[in-house]
Length: 537
Image (cartoon, rainbow, N blue to C red; front, side, top):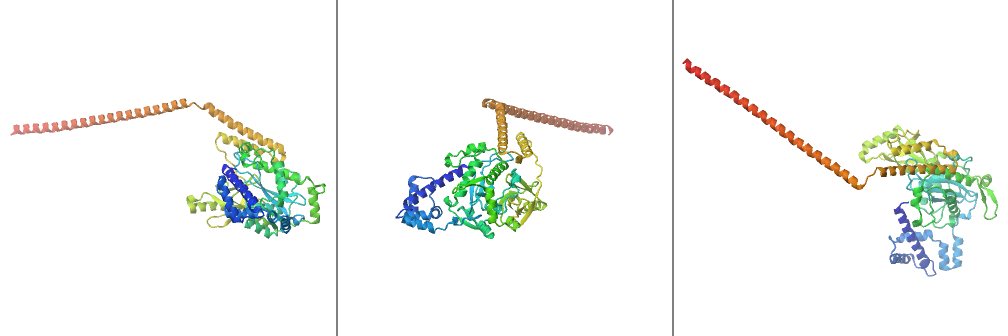
């Protein structure tokens, strides 16, 4: 999280705190103010206290009042306990239906951990966003989808999470090296989502209507309506993230979170984090659960099989239609040799074809310097065998298949050679055969080697460095030598010019002498002729 994002979050929390104070003092009372008067009071308190930023607008104030404040709470504070009880009973409760694969709670967690890029091993700017779905009857996790790219909640990733719930993950245990598969999946009856903007998008509800799934919207700040998945988020932080390098405590206030140190300690790549996380979630699926009401301990797998035997969830028949619905939309650059590179769960996939390169050349000739090779790409996390590329000129979609990865040519530099050695070591290691502790140890060892390499370079630079006075003297010597060289060149040029001028003058003088001598000889000949002519007469 950047400094600007942290400052915006602090301002938002200040506005939220002031809003709750206004509601408690002027709205949730026996003689409440109307919304307009309460908002005017908020603006005046904002200016009196000298808070940073601008106060929230009237529309935002009304929206917060509608989404974040419980109507039963207002009825109880304004009209008494009986009115609050009646309002509670008349509210539409989504948890009245308590059956298998209904009221599946879904939430989005900004995982408080920094990861590193697997190319240059630098810390990524954005933390991963985890989508978790919780089935309340069997307490099983139906799916887990991670957004490593955008750093914000997006509707297309939520749709991909729905696809993972409906279709399952048959090859995940092979991918992460776990002995048992992910068994929990199937079509659900209803879902509980919070009021995030990504959850309210048109594509999300169109997708759910297509597969006849009911969506219940819970209030964003109301934890009771999706308390189970909120508890699962806390469990995820304590059992998956806690102890990993690059993790920080997000339960603290924003100004107290040690994100700088966490970024510096980041060591796990996306691939390594994906394997560790998936194994812990699979351990959770095959673990035991204690019922809070009866105190009975049961296996989640046995309970899932029992519920499927009584009321098996329906499965998707048209898998291709489900996979091709929507998809993740990203901007990618078409490379001349590599084509387009897509990363899924820390693993790179290359897509290229002659039609793609022909489209790149055509767009380059049409758009000229305005085309930098970037196009809109649509792909799915479920099927990785092809992607769709949008032609910005004709608005047509091109289907591009997956190809074998091309050979990477390293740059000729000491650091790049060192990083290439680390990449070769990582490529030679089979992470699926290593335990979680061994993966963490390998990541920390790689981090230590990188630090030692950087420290050695710094020491070498300091050793070869000279003082400011010596550097100034060397620069003065260079300047003086340059001036002396320019002076010598000027003197040489002048001497050359003088020599050439003198030689040219001597040549001209000799030529004049020869001309005078010839003229004299001619005159002498004429005089002799004249003398002879006189004698003849």
